Length: 267
Ligand SMILES: Cc1cc2nc3c(=O)[nH]c(=O)nc-3n(C[C@H](O)[C@H](O)[C@H](O)COP(=O)(O)OP(=O)(O)OC[C@H]3O[C@@H](n4cnc5c(N)ncnc54)[C@H](O)[C@@H]3O)c2cc1C
Image (cartoon, rainbow, N blue to C red; front, side, top):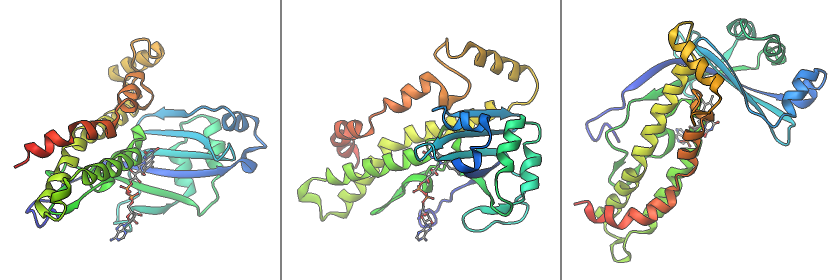
């Protein structure tokens, strides 16, 4: 689609990769500290220079879900189409060797040969998401670093807003290809500013979480110690102001309220 439009998606190498791990309760049950994590009803993020781990229990606390981010140093050669590769357990343990003993024990539970690593890729904001009767949704138009936990959420919202826009094409114009394109353009106008903001915020939050020693880290840690008293914390995923902005955004209501005006404004 972009080639037809004479443009391209400019890929940005984020320099980051992620391990994704799921551990079973039965494999953690022997360790009281791990059991406490599983039962804590808490999402925990351990952060360090250029790397972090986020983890929480799922499936009625039967599974501990772990996602990491670390320097992308194991993808020197091209990966497969899904940007995943089988990682070495030793390398994974080395990458997190400076973390606390609990993390070492948790990562050590990953079976050898089952370390799966994702390359984290994004691209610059696309000039458009729509061509004729084709519209892009989700990661195809706004791949997002996982640090805000919003990529899939935004993809679902895209789908819902797209459906709302298509359902609002005036009945007498349903056979008119131009009206379909206009409705898709309205979808893009409704979604692009919000998704671009969250894509940028996810990158920003990653940079803050991954700071090394220095003044910027000292200031970040001071803000963490303040614990949201100012209405904000450096981890944007956990920040009260950001959570309010994300979860009070009623994309369907906005589509209902603004569709007619935006549709009429398009030539
Ligand atoms: C480590 C990590 C952690 C994340 N954590 C979160 C989180 O906590 N919360 C959150 O909201 N998001 C999270 N995300 C982001 C989320 O996974 C993505 O944003 C989401 O999956 C995007 O959905 P999508 O449907 O747009 O694309 P995808 O999930 O990539 O789906 C596209 C599908 O199309 C298929 N496909 C591709 N080409 C073709 C073809 N030619 N023909 C047919 N099928 C094709 C692919 O196989 C794939 O199944 C995370 C991502 C990563 C990498």
